[in-house]
Image 1 (cartoon, rainbow, N blue to C red):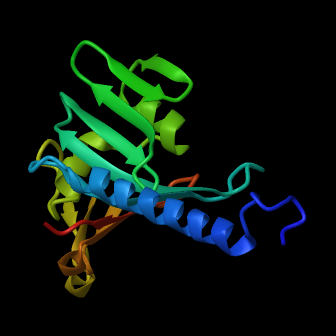
Image 2: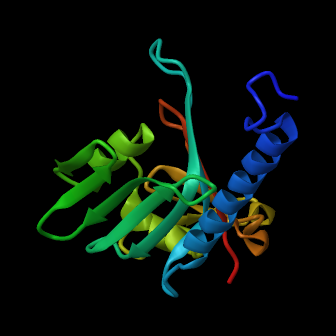
Length: 187
């Protein structure tokens, strides 16, 4: 008999319930992640900002969904189980970040990504980069040697060597050095 009395659950019952709750959470998380818009870019995003000026290295990773374009769109970041960490929405009128702490308005996408990810990212270009092509609004330079498969743009080296696997890597060497890696979901 259990020390808490005859009505207390056994250790195996508690473990079974915990496992059931974890599986239910995973199923719910998968269902919410699976309900993506057809025009969305989605997958796993990781950002690493290297040590600089006494600041330690910072890393961030999350599931993401990027919808729209540089003028009007949204970026949703969530845990692997589908819990939304933050959602950024932008239009010509405003740039807004919604988190569990509330809403914050930003002057532009660079300021928002600096707050959200730890460093300003070229979100306007990301829409094209994640599709394996340079952003048409500015010049780009093909990577040499060609076997590295990629291009340079806006001070970033975009590597597409594993694009067939859904992987895009963008690196900025200028301090603080930043690496962004996206592993795209496949439809």
